[in-house]
Image 1 (cartoon, rainbow, N blue to C red):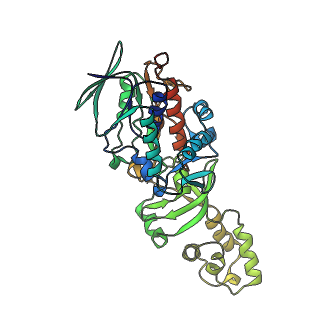
Image 2: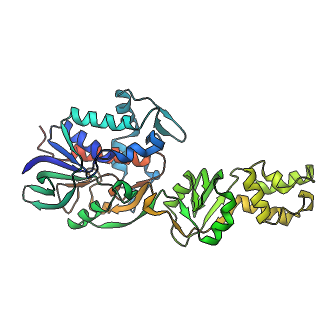
Image 3: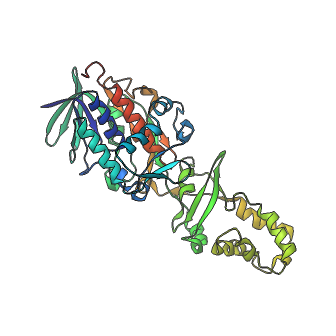
Length: 399
């Protein structure tokens, strides 16, 4: 039976970061993953350029049953720390918007950087290795794999969530948590497109492919980013953001002209250009096809601005500035970028990520009930939680 100080299940962002730090402290480390290659979510992220962190990262950018849980890890390993690592490896990068950092080149550079750091710190990687069982004994844990048994003093679970199952995502980490007495917060798809019932989809059909900057709100939560009409419903950054807060049966409100008082604008246009069509006036602020659709669906396409009463113009303005819609669902884990919920943080030490009911067992990254906004926040949680566990694991055994 092979034996290591630390075994990490999951060769994603959190798992590789943890392995680097544990190896740096002199521990023998093995990272195993059922996939053929490490860092698959890193590879596809950010359109292939990897939005690897966000300079504005803070606790307010995360959802959790305990919003304060992430504070310790995020304050101890910051975006600046990861940027320093990226810079040491000579990876060119740029800030896109809202603090989001992307590679100038390929996301594969981030994977290569992590693998290089693992190698430098003698952390071994073993892909295409599936764990079929885990037991705990007096001297640690024993993992059953197709290639044999592996023993370790400490076990790190960085197996991710359920999002994007075609890449091999599963509920393995959650089952393992329950096996060792940890509670779970109900999981659901997050950062995911929202869908509508067939009747609404038929109404929206002329808008498929149209993109527009919006402010979308659900209760007191509001995001102002781009939105895209799709053949299933709504997508784009604004919708992905609000999807983490939305629940079945709830409505969302869209402002298709954030910062614009459309009613005042239409009244002014009526006074200055009374013979102008309503759709033409709306096209000053909206894509032309969307402007035409709103004019038609509010019955304002009949006649010019001069023919519209204040009541009619207000109806048009509300369709732009306060359009309320009720999605029926989401596209699910198939397209969700992350999983909301997970291992209950009440059962984890916020400084070390060690499981309170089971010393020597750690949970890091997406498998934990800490979910970030779109824009590099989830990667920063992966780096920070992995770093913290890597600093803590095997205390007293590191040379």
